[in-house]
Amino acid sequence: VDPAPSNGRMKQAGNKGDDDDKYEKIRRQRSSFLQISCVSFILLIAAGFLTSGRTLSETEEAIVSAERGAQRAARNLIRREARGSEGQAEVEAQVESQATVQRDLRPVQADDEPRTVTPGVLSEEELAARVEDLDAEVRKIKANLPDGAFMETDPTALGATGKLQEATRELLARRYGPKEPYRVRVVLEFQDTISDFKEKGPQGSLLLEMAPSKLVPHSIFSFLEIARNWKGGAFHRIAGHVLQVMVKGRNGRPLAFQEYSPEFPHKKGTIGYAGRPSGPAWYVSIMDNSRNHGPGSQQQKNPHEADSCIGKVIEGFDTDVQRITKTSGSGFLSDKKKHVLIKEMQILVPGEGSEAVDGYVPWTSSETSVNTP
Image (cartoon, rainbow, N blue to C red):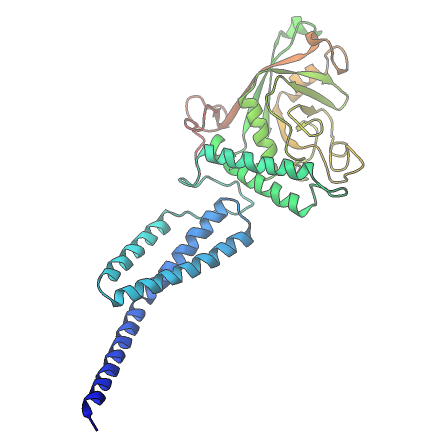
């Protein structure tokens, strides 16, 4: 028997065993990297999806996909290391890169808390564009809702309105600051047609405080945008239960859906949106309207729909609101000289400094606002 072939085969087998041992050793050495890589990719994808308003099921799918991708990448790097030192450098670079990503990530707050802005995620312009897209989606769903279905109970509608609300909370925090509640100073001008004009003159004002954004963010954001872009308007309807405001021009648009929270009903002194769809016209309740403006009150077809209640009068209700009720006439006032004009709507946010009054300062812009965490 010729020994040469036998020795060659033995040598070849021995080399294969050495290679297997080397690969197994490298595999064990890099097992920690595999774990770090998988966890880092999962955290990155989960944080990105949760801050972008994706559903939990979408996030879970993304996590599974990211985990598989991380595992494949790790195995490829281990194999490349077996062929030389280049793989080692790439492994170290990947580990450092993922560690940096993890250090930059911040935890997301619970859903029942006002959400603060995570720096570096989306700009104010990008958030505004996202809210606009979600708003359009909700309006489309509402326009094509099947007979017998309601926005307040339909699963598709609820999913869409929930995404819009969450995105709007983020935009509120970015544009107007994360500290709440927001306030709006309403500067009034009484005209000389009112009976007490000679005694009290033209000046008047109301201070409104918004509801928590965790309850009705879409309605609050719409109201603050009306105030921010105020072009004029007036109290033009004097009714037994409300004093209603007309908004001049195209300042604001109706709500995308009838947003309502039973935790903030239409009690005496609150403010709500008028009409269907509601807004931008709004009113002050001068009596408890919890039942006649609450769910199922405005129409028989939908037992769930209600006017959106967005805030309350915290100054001026016992003075200037009562003065408005003394306007000559009732109902919708056709004589504009009898209107109580709204000359200005000034947004106030929590803050400190020389301009602060009772812990609030005038809001100017998201870049200069002192309403920061």
